[in-house]
Length: 221
Image (tube, rainbow, N blue to C red):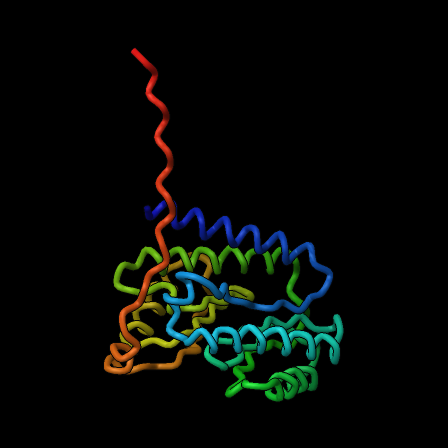
């Protein structure tokens, strides 16, 4: 099972890399799958998950329209907290991106992790996608963590962890992430819950396990 989960995660990362690198626009939009068991496993309400998708799309569109291709900005929203990372050429562009993001409907807080400097190369962006996949696979392997409670973003080897988690979960996830080869730094963008608040969310429905491979037919004797 462990090998299967890791393989699925890395395959998803590779597919994302192909899709991202084939696009012309340098602005990257994050997103979560909304539907079925993944919604049930998420600690956000279904309505909040939909809002987060809308926040990402609106922020990405408005930043692209205002700033064009001179920037590479990654937009990720979790529970109405909007993380913006990537690169711009000067401090004015960094401030402008935050101003635009903060004016998007339903955004409660903007975490501005944009770097001033040259835009990341295609190789770096591809490496970041693979790194995010490795971190997700490692979180899945950590049996004392609910991996779907975490949103993982990698940018220039820096891994951003988002989610609604307890202090214990935050510390454990940080420790696990730091153990992954290629991680330069871990930045925590968490909403910390008490154990009582977590218990009040109710039981979590985990996503279904991948189906077992079909056994080969037995030749008649």
